[in-house]
Amino acid sequence: MTERPAKILAVDDDAAMCSVLEVGLGRRGFEVVTSTHAQDALARLRDEDFDALLTDLQMPGVGGIVLCTEALAIRPGLPVVVITAFGSLESAIAAMRAGAYDFITKPFDLDVLAMALRRAAEYAWLKQDVQRLKQELAERPRYSGIVGESSAMRRVYDLLERTRDSEVTVLVTGESGTGKELVARALHDASGRSHGPFVAVNCAALPEALLESELFGHAKGAFTGAQVQRSGLIVRAQSGTLFLDEIGEMSLAVQAKLLRALQERKLRPLGSDDETAFDVRIISATNRDLLGAVEEGRFRSDLYFRINVLDIHLPPLRERGNDVLLLAQQHLERTASNVGKAVHGLAPEAAAKLRAYEWPGNVRELHNCIERAVALTRFDHVTLDDLPDSVRKYSASHVLVVAESPGDFVGLEEVERRYILRVLAAAQDNRSVAARILGLDRKTLQRKLARWQQEDG
Image (cartoon, rainbow, N blue to C red; front, side, top):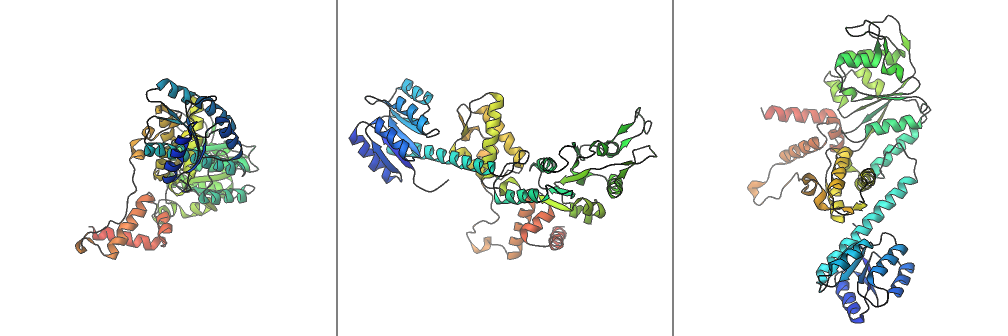
């Protein structure tokens, strides 16, 4: 959150109370403007920006509830904190129905009031940040639901823009849950093939024989149960795009057949002597270290270079900064609308936890978290208590700890070992990604890991 002081408009018909609020809240880091008349306060709201409005509920003439309603008409989204007499629950409920963000009962403690106002201001700042991000996002080309304005995502948008009219074969890489299929669909929708079909197949979900049949099709009688001729997914993607998700899970035998088809732009269905020509753009995706798989003989090098003419790497959510809040707010609004629940935003404490968490499951995990929170919340915003324990209780891990005595310290090589293993774990054992983070070439990293494994027995 921003460090600037929150600007508060405090309204009370008692001039002495206004003076107490101005001095007391001023000492607690707020910029306070006071008013003893509701109409004067409304005029100020028309001319000046405030982060929150504080008003007494019981005032002669225009009372706090009416002031709350009219203030929100002038400044929609402005957090309003009302001060009500002790035990006046009905008045507090009426204020909340009028749109108040929070209420404080008399007699109040200035520290408690300051905490409520600080929370209200942070809530307003959060909404402004999300709105700003949405506006920035709206001003750039939209790509099939891809959301994000971080520098990492701007690099992705730049590649999408530069290749939208190209027929180049693309490999989309990134951790599980980062949205690789969204990027593939975006490339298809922005290309000259958008009129054709987009056909997706998950190579990890099908056994070898079934995957081969699904991709290339089969002739009648090609195998037991093949009672009719069936065209494969490659042919069904004619004039469009074929998306091969998790291509790293494809067997070597199917890889060889796919390579031949891509080279000749023809395929032969199972059990058939006839070849069929096809015109299809291939986009592949993987969360595996394909270059490592090539070195280990689990993936064909010739196919790797055939499908990896252009590599678009999707950053993990933990590297995308405030994109977490933008994605959370967008999914919150969509989920609340789908279930018919009046949930509009995130409490500042909840937003701070979402921002700090590392999201090993990436966008998919964030979506699940928000759906759960919307289902559980009893308010018009998601609170800290609505988040799962893994997010709410999260604290960042540290590679190094402070030592209390010389005997607790370790040598530089052990520090290097711990750090490299920590980076490798964060990269989900993708050695190419880890090497890039560490500034090492992949072979150097391989040698270090092999030596440590040997030393560990």
